[in-house]
Image (cartoon, rainbow, N blue to C red):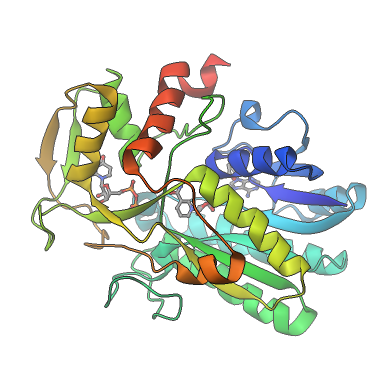
Length: 330
Ligand code: NAD
Ligand code: UDP
């Protein structure tokens, strides 16, 4: 039996594929390489290049693979892009889920672990955010992911497809040996941009807003290491295999770091100056996002290894030093 990883050539998907293989799983990957990299896929996984929305292609994959469970990372995830091109998000993300659930049902595959996001909560009323808090997205990306959660809820009721929705907060870091890491074009996430400045690939970092209601005025986010996240997916597969009911879990460290604190930690790790300028707020940015993640710890037995921001940054810096041009170097 194999685990089918959709989006396994992407940042989080490639780390999860790698961890699954290290733990002895038989893994197949589907990816259309729209943002992913073939070189990121562990060589022991079987790779099918194609689009999740293409039902015939997906049927072919399910015919060739004896799939016991699906892990679904294949989506677009850039908030500002989603504000400008919302339909692109509903097409790839939401419609993609329709096609996937249909084919899973045809092939009687009953388990799915899904990449959801803190963006489904929108602007939180209380911190830390609990899974039971209202989900009121403030952008089309978050809305497209909430709709995907909703589809899985009804597909569970109708067809008995059990799901775990993992609501990630801010994901960072890389496999410590520097062999795989984060390589997005364009890069929009804070930490890789900070490290590109440290590596001399950009002149400076623009911090979007220093007038928020936080101690230093910059946004606060909750960072989780990509390998701890990969571990949570494997635990979630086990949770479903044990016959548990569908559920959603926050994945964060429960500790917040301001954008300025991230820069200071990165200066310490890299020994570089990392010049900063203050820029206006970015549309749709909530002030503070911190996860209550005790549910994942209690019910999945999740115990993140990385609880130290500098250690997380070190692994990302190692990837940047080994691959200054990302996967173009491989
Ligand atoms: P990524 O862009 O690196 O990976 C996504 C992968 O899916 C890519 O390899 C891409 O080629 C593939 N893909 C996209 N649409 C596809 C389609 N229709 N058919 C086949 N393949 C397709 O993104 P990532 O940072 O690894 O994020 C993975 C998931 O995690 C996303 O769904 C995102 O919403 C979610 N997420 C990420 C973060 C983060 O901080 N990176 C935070 C919260 C949630
Ligand atoms: N950010 C920033 N400058 C950048 C990129 C991001 O100040 O060049 C800020 C962004 O406004 C947010 C935080 O960094 O407050 C994290 O943003 P990111 O896009 O990495 O993740 P998000 O929290 O949006 O998922």
